[in-house]
Length: 377
Image 1: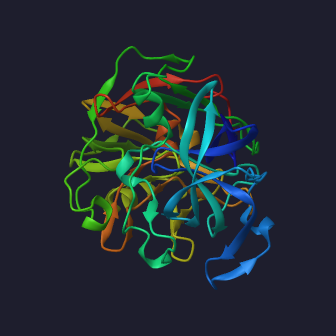
Image 2: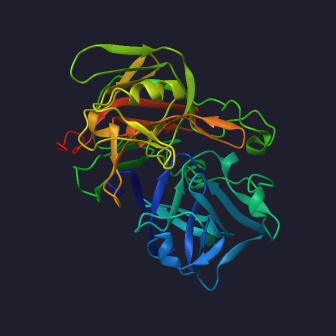
């Protein structure tokens, strides 16, 4: 994988027919999509057309003249960062030398979502219920959760066709300080990444996410997101051995498309106050601003009786555009009556992770990729 944006985005190479693109690796969504050559970039605030380059995508997909579209279906997906709209088509998709013929994909012709300057879409690695094809030839942007035409996402197609085992793995890397782009680690399709890791695995069943409205689940009690149970949180100062523990369990979504850990609000407040100097919440930006050279607290996430400690380098994120820094810890994501906690890249940089569809479980081991121990100072 390739890491961009100071290691807050992780991309993998994929072939669409004979065309090659980088896609954002996202365990928090399920669709694979790419922007087409003449796509329209849209300003989300004013709902107005703006130049393509404002969407920050890389190369665009030249739709073949013999492209086969899915009849009477449209594509429309909504993320925290924007929406992507278009058509549903079939294409031969290859990742890591493994090809799925005639895979359903989204061919995006309108987007408020943005890339990282080099990627051209998203590789969604989630469950089928979150796929975003919709019945009908037109789509109402305000109802992207309705009328879903559920299909098998790319990885699900791979294992159902017997091309790989029913699980994939990740080991993502951090980059040295002030390096914005570089090696991003490994995505293993039915195999573990070639990194050193502990032999002790924490096993977490993938749970039905509590509190999701019927719009997300179709009114069915089923797995949608990569949701697990967190046993508790531990934290403390780097300069002494004192630790505070909150043993209240909660659900969290493991999401490689999210740079942050989003924890219960009171926990996020307490841990951010432990930075020296303390991180201060910025209402406008929605993050805890922090000095780039602040001393970060220790943080441990409890899963299946094991605590996964974060390296201090993963507690502070530097914005590539402004150079300003903010904490990788925030409160829950809220909106539309939903409140969700997330374990994002700040967590995933410290573990080797396995996502197993056959057993409906996730597994984690302390891991160390080649650059995990790089000195960021």
